[in-house]
Image (cartoon, rainbow, N blue to C red):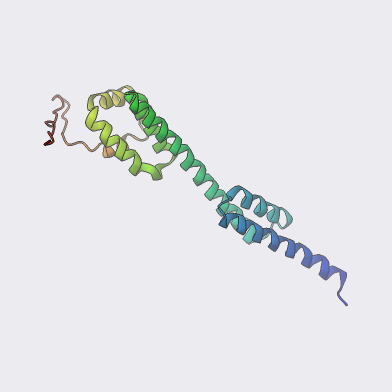
Length: 168
């Protein structure tokens, strides 16, 4: 015969394992929030369970990453929309905001900033001057991305490279 205490102890462990497995299935399907709910339920039932703790921690990192990536995508869309309307200031500022939210997207920001800088170098310089304090945290990164072909000295006006004419 099975002792009552043994049965009581096995049932919670079985339930925790079941919750973790359900969480894993949700995670594999790309349903991070659903996975997190199962992992949190398992952790609530067994607060000392290291597997449940780690799964919650890892899933929270994925959820945070996805959230930042989504906010970054919104910034890029807004930047592109403003650029299309020739509102260079807001196009630039949305790029900066995207870079702050999701530094992993710096290659996308650099592509857009390079184009912007080639087409509107004076406007970009004016924005950088006007917003110097607000951009202090990302200024070095922005300067590194600007893809400047000309060199500026404080006393000399900017030099423009001649426009390239394409053959017809």
